[in-house]
Length: 122
Image 1: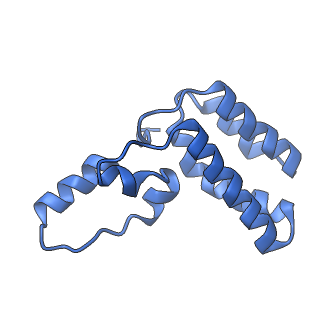
Image 2 (image 1 turned 90 degrees about the vertical axis):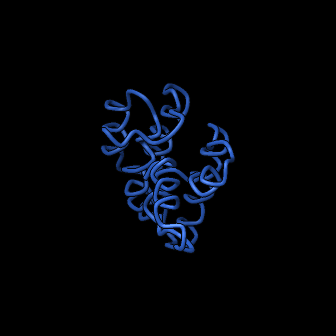
């Protein structure tokens, strides 16, 4: 879901009181704010979202390995926010433990350009 898609739907159906954008929010945590005219999530905001979600999953599941598996699902969406993400996405998928996963995430945030919005063509 892109911002323009949300705005187009609202314009086309003005009597709708809201849109369901669950997976769109996973892919782009700033989507709701962008639909209201706010800027997209910057690198720091996105990294903080990832860190807080990962820590929450670790607490919820009581095991960092289980949290890594859940976070990999989230990253199938988040990775689309980064340009030229192929080899980095592969490293992330191959990570088997929390240390390897955290290193793969760190490298993504360090090396890759953050796109203005999700690249749904990938």
